[in-house]
Image 1 (cartoon, rainbow, N blue to C red):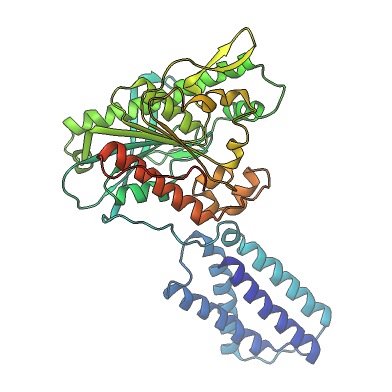
Image 2: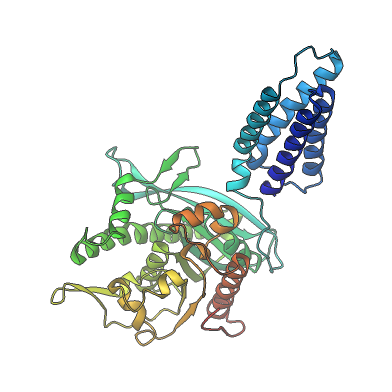
Amino acid sequence: MGLLVLFVTLIIEFMLAIYCVTTKQIHSKLRSWIRIALFTTFVLLTLSSVIVWDFRWVMLAILLFILAVIGTVSLIRNKANTKEYKSSRMIGKAMLMTFALLFVCIPALVFPQYKLPKVTGEYNVATATYTYTDENHIEQFTDTGENRFVNVQFWYPENADGTYPLLIFSHGAYGIKDSNTSTYTELASNGYVVVSIDHPYHSFYTVSDDGTTTLVNKEYMREISNLNTEGIYTPEEVYGLIQKWMKLRTDDINFVIDTILHKSENDNNPIYQLIDTSKIGVFGHSMGGAASVWVGKERDDISAVVNIDAPLFSELIYNTEIDNFAASSEVYTTPLLNIYSDDVWVQLETIPVYAANKTIESKSTEAYTVHFKGAKHLSLTDLPLFAPVFANILQGGRKAHIDKYYCIETQNELILKFFNYKLKGTGSFEFEETY
């Protein structure tokens, strides 16, 4: 929609400039009427929801409004234009307007208006956000001595009766808790209470209940960048980083689960009373997926785990004899669904950090593996829907070859089927190995 709006307005501006140059007249009245018409059309398209009003359109609306006001004042004053016509002046104005339109349309181009993935459940979905303070952990990323806090957001069935399984989500390396909103919404609409965690200083940014914004830690970002650059860290150093990252992540997840379990017994908030505490699943993307698998191994009250495009860090050991990673010999006992994009799929056989992923089906009591052919790492999040430019940049300029709606909707369907099967005992988990 942003590209269409920009194209139409630029065509109109170019046609007007060409008309003025061809006739060698300024045509002030015509210009004024066109500016008023453009703003009026924009307002009508917004009121009719053809253009969905949000931050994308603010700068364009301001520019069109200013031009419409100037045009209206010009028509009311109805003064004859005494300026001498100059083609260079008309061309200059056209170029200036082109740059102005390009600038104000940047938000709409970078974050294009998009349709929401389908939601199949019977329940309307409500959301709520909270900040939990962990009294047992001091924040390691600051020197203030303050306790660590964790921001969470709930997606849950609105005006529903009964209780529903609890699902905890952990985002990627420097993602945000909203990264898979379409998945949370689909699950909640089908009778789940979904809680997504922002891991402070691991998330790109997070906003607390008091409005405080916390940005990703620069040293942590440097570590991630260096990890993806060959030759900077030894395997032993990488193993140490993994242990550090996973401890922070799993501590957060365990703290959130324990807090919710406590509140379900002691807090009258209706959200907590919706939760069936005997049915808990965890899932996550990338580093969040690795942390989810880890928590699924540690806790006895986790009944199902979904790993989205992540190494199975909890199932790795560092082998000093070969100075590299190897799969643990332990059996993973929690039902596990692994979902992979091409980015990870091609590394399963070649990258040592994925050693446990290759053997999980033989070293697990119940594990399933799915591959989305043509998908990139971020195809398994909502980012390509609302910020495709950023998704491509973060993926090294590589565009996914799978339809983004097919990919995320099929993934959501698989996750729902898996949790239904393991947490609700409904249906069977039927899937294809490749989509």
